[in-house]
Length: 192
Image (cartoon, rainbow, N blue to C red; front, side):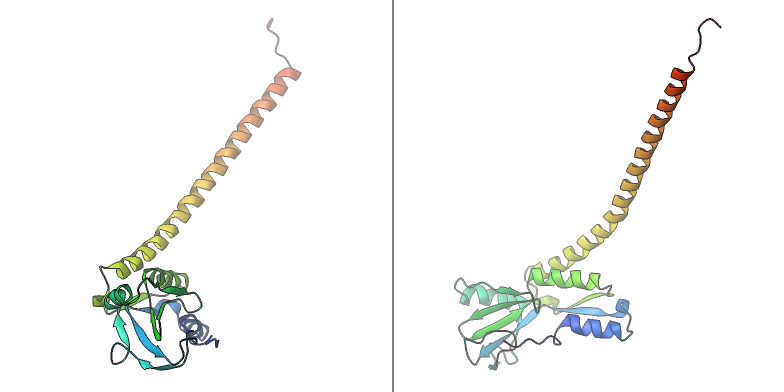
């Protein structure tokens, strides 16, 4: 199985950044469509496998909404599989090979864009979304990251306040102990 380590988003983003292009000027594209191919050999079904060409449409592109219906109606219980190397969902039925970004993949890609410090992400073909599930996945990933970034300063401030309080209690108790020791060593007489 060939590995195309340079044919992925991370490789390209990293090249741009290492060559001096500011990360905060890059935008990650999120397609709400995928592509369908007819495999030459059904036993060779990895990313980059030889194909006879596109299927289902002239160029093989299929909107997520239509693809979801296709998988439901034609898949007969077959479910898409996540490919972590290429961060893509793949659906294979006989000689048909379909790749696309489902909600989990969209969420991972938004997380990636935030981790890399990119300007953001761009969705193309919003009309291909099915009941807004992809848009919602992108929004939740983006908001989840922002929420975590907000919680960190709160957690640090709370921990710092806890430490200050602990030191205050320690010094208070230590001061009481010292003053008690002084009273034990030099008892005040009640006759004076």
